[in-house]
Length: 205
Ligand code: MN3
Image 1 (cartoon, helix red, strand yellow):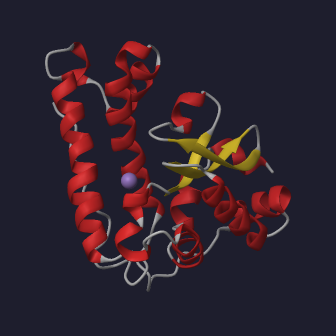
Image 2: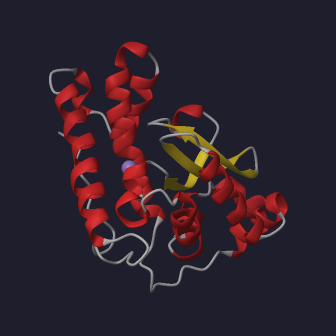
């Protein structure tokens, strides 16, 4: 068994004009594909080859001798999660009642949550990710550097992510990370996916 590049959950031009088809062709078709391929090369002659991608990420995070494997496997996982965090520009994905309750509890309003996603994305120095996570009955916005992922935290459940590596926006927005972030946050986030990722225990509130 090998790790597969998952199908993109929409057409390559479905995120235009915020994320162009050309960006998707490089970002998904080249960058993401390369992380998948490299992960497969690194696990080829090991007993990790029958593990899931998530298991490989957790295993590789446990020891710094596996840093290269971690970087590639976590990037493969983060990118799959990122594509699922987005929706076609002309599709509506409303925030569920359950998720809205938590947003109001922890941010006061959807507008405040969006602001925080944008601010944390701008504040992330260099390459990395911004995440909406669920932890201890609360929502939080966090950022991670390079390939780092909340999967390894043991307590944070990722709900949504935004890639803030330059390759995510440079063809379309050049250095304007803020424009990329605000357009994406306003028009491309898949709140249904966030809702699906909420643990069932979150339903108590
Ligand atoms: Mn990327």
